[in-house]
Every structure is written in structure tokens, then in C-alpha cells.
Amino acid sequence: MPGKSVRMLFIGNSFTTKNDLPTLLSDIAQAGKGITIETKVISAGGASLRRHWNAGAATTITSEKWDHVVFQEQSTLPVKNSNRFHENVREFMPAMKESGAKMVLFMTWARKKEPENQALLTDSYNKIGKELEAFVVPVGTAWQKLLAKHDKPVLHAEDGSHPTIAGSYLAACTFYATLFGGDPTEIETDLGNLIDEERKLLQRIAMTVGKT
Image (tube, rainbow, N blue to C red):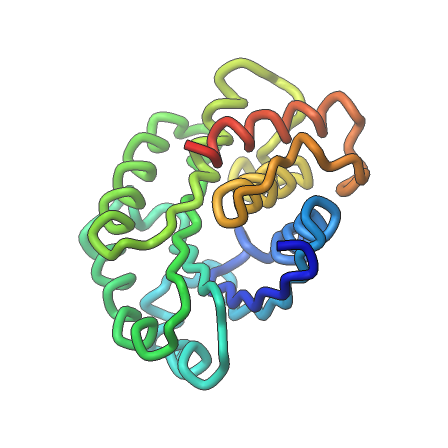
């Protein structure tokens, strides 16, 4: 796999673009396995997948060659209306089949004040992932696992919703382990300006979750 080149399209909102998750993942994959990831992002603040569908995102899927297309739903929709979330993902299936790319679902995390919602998010993402035979990257599960036992590093930004750099680093490591079978704990590169102890903790959590 070293020297492998991968093209990834990310469709989502600020949960994807905050701290530039796609570039973090690219840096980790390069440092870990020498994989070059070329990324493109379709994003709008607070956007749902339905909004992206209506704006013509499917055309971007079919008009270029992708290895993976990552779908990130508006963060509370799978909790409030799981059926609508599932309908939104299904809308993209014809474009995905035409493109031949692998469908990836970016399972997001619960808001800081609503940790009980993680079970609903996890279930909703796993159900549609199983139905459509898509990869589910269990970022929310990784967050849940860390938050259950550790106060540091802080994952939620001050708004209690968006990720800190540590939260995005954990997400990127979980993507790396899930999609590429990589071991984040082998990466020595200091990405994200995290202290060594925190970085290693995030890597370990991502490894345990991403490999399951």
C-alpha cells in the first residue's frame, strides 16, 4: 500500500471543515502508510445531506473519479428524524453506483450537554450503513469512549458542538484505522499541536474503535 494514491470526496458541513479534517487525515495517512490522499470538500454551514442533494452534489460524485465519498449528516438530524437521515443517504445511491466509489458514512458525536444522544446517533448510522453496505467510520463512538474515562484532552469546542483540534485529530485517526487499516499508534509525527501524552491517548482510542 505505500505509495498508494486515493481520491476522497467529503460532503458535509462544519463538523468536517472545522480544523480541516480532510487534510488532517491526509497528513496521518502519509505519515503512517505513505498513502497520498487527494481530497475535495463540498460543505455549507449547518447543511443536511438533503440540502447538498438539492444543490447538485450528486453531479460531483459522478463527474469525477473517486475512491471514497464521505457523507456527514447535519449533526442532530439522525437523533430528531432517523428516517429522514436514511432517506437522504439513499438519495445518493444511484450516483454512488454509477461512480463505483465506496460509500463512507461519517458517524458524528453527540453534543456536550446531550451525551445520551450518542446511542441514537450510533444506531442510526449503523442501520443505514448495514442496509447500504457502506463503511461507517465510528467517530462518535471514539468520542464516547474517551469522554467516559477522560477529561483531557477536551474534544468539544466552547460551543459544546464543534470539535477542538483534539476532537478532529481523534476523528482523523478513526478514519485512518477504519478505512485504511492503519495503526494510528505507530505515527510519531506531531500533528495538531497536541501534547505527546494526549496525542497517544487519542491514537489508542481510535485504534480500538476503528479496528472493530
